[in-house]
Image 1 (cartoon, rainbow, N blue to C red):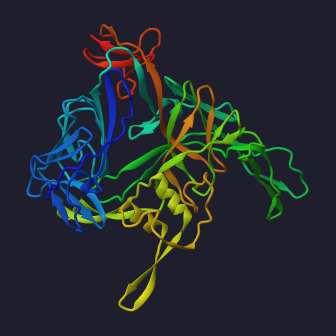
Image 2 (image 1 turned 120 degrees about the horizontal axis):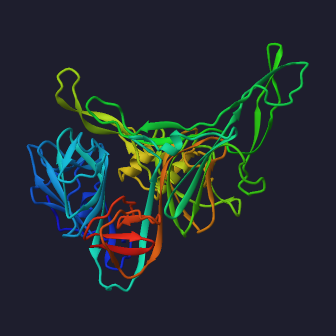
Image 3 (image 1 turned 180 degrees about the vertical axis):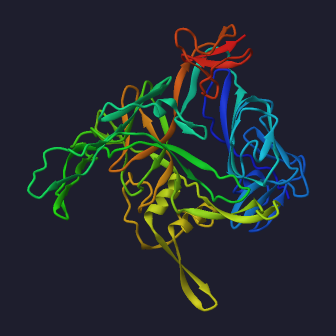
Length: 526
């Protein structure tokens, strides 16, 4: 049942001369934000045809319902916006052009699980320019956790200029495979250096070789790595974010991983005996956060060099969560602060999903595990304790309840507890270091965000392991002058200038009547 409408105002991510770019994030875990009742566990709140979920100028409208309505459904404390058979919904922004729409949740893959009135979908994300986007469920129950909408709205101010927020994106690997610069990388015998860039950002990915163990007789002396070296290489890898269940699409997190520990020096460790021989292994000296040992000279790292001040959001895989993950400012040789969000191995929850029977081929409702997307505060909370202890009263009197790290994350995500809830810590991770992301010997995969200065270089690496890399977003502000016009032409001119749409995405062609960014100026194609 719908209550009085509550409008959530979100800060815009851009300030444009004639068009302001706004980002609106819908989080369906709390329907009361949008004026709808919050369902109890295993219950639901239906949407009637014509009902809208609204926030900051964006409307999500229920267009059609089947035997099961579009609805908010509560499964074990996790609330999502669901679309079953014959359900469809539209997304609009009051007649303004939507340039990006992305979804998170389960069973959300274009062509496989839903159709749309718009082309330009890539999995669960869409980019383009449209006043309305329709989503029609075609297979499996869509379970939408969040929806992010970017749209443009007209602003006053004429053609006098201002500031524009631009976001450049580089994707090194996705479901279609690895970028050619990695796939065709060559080694100089010690390192493999892969260079790539966007308009205002240059990046080097450096992978290193590793020495093979040397076996010598007990009467021999080690002099060099006579067994040779393992050459640097780049591997394509992925991690699934949910269970592989019949009829349910597995969601993957893709990343590239290079080789070599990022060390400032390599030596030889004390040999170990094996039969009548001695085995010599490498001994590494690793980076120190006080900068006293200098920067890594071998092994895997990524170096970002921006041309303007801005913010980098890098998508990474941290192989060992209990190893230090650093972003180091090259000139100072000391690490800088960053925030993180993403997934930690073994932190998952059980959700309801529509599956296909292997026996009958029919859809059925079952349960599956999915990784929990954690924000910076939640990850910090998990750092603070492996077990939390509650005191509560049951039929036998007072007793205690302990929550594991996974249950902590699940309870926070479901809104059952918060980081401020009074809790007795009974067992500590011992993790209070800002450069340890996951704690324990668990992997982390997600995003780290940090501020950068023009002309400086920033190294991303892990203390004594390998960081996987997916890509990055670089966001910065630039001064906008009055709008210029030009005839329709290729987006990349002979002079090498690059053109971006108003969502900050690099484009290969431009079309009449649309606004673009080139060299800090707005371009109106006529």
